[in-house]
Each structure stands twice: as structure tokens, then as C-alpha cells.
Image 1: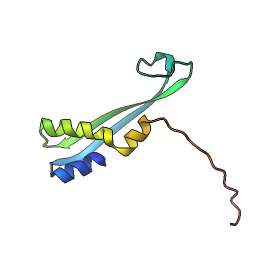
Image 2: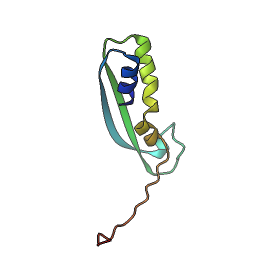
Image 3: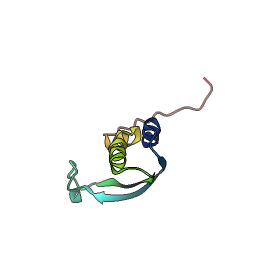
Length: 92
């Protein structure tokens, strides 16, 4: 959505964006780019991005930069803390 919005704003001929994701689990000790070096498993998500349209190489390059500004991408790249709250389900 971030890329499509950017392209619309610039009036670039982007027809569609196709994103393919692949999920796997790897051992932290096998990850060269990871800070964590314990014997735990890490989630790894591989992304493939396809930009469809008659775009120049400069436009494609700029949109590849923009993809890292997507709120979902930024959330997944940050440290995530999940706080669970239990609801009683009763009347208020």
C-alpha cells in the first residue's frame, strides 16, 4: 500500500504490486546477521517484490527504497513485545 500510494502521488505508471512471502524457522546460531546467538529458533521471512508497469529503472529503484518505510515492514523489523490481556467476557 505504501508503494502504491507513493506511485499514485508521483503519477507513475505502476499497475500493481505483487509481494510473495516465505516463512521458515532457523537456529539463531546459524544466522550471520542476527544479534541473538543462543540455541533458539528465529522466524525468517523472505520477501519477493514485483512491480508491474512501464516504470523507469529510477522509479523502480525509488520504490524499492520506499518499501522499507511501510509501517508493517517497520513493525516486523523492530523488537516486538506482545502483551496479553484476559477479558472476563461478563457484563460491564
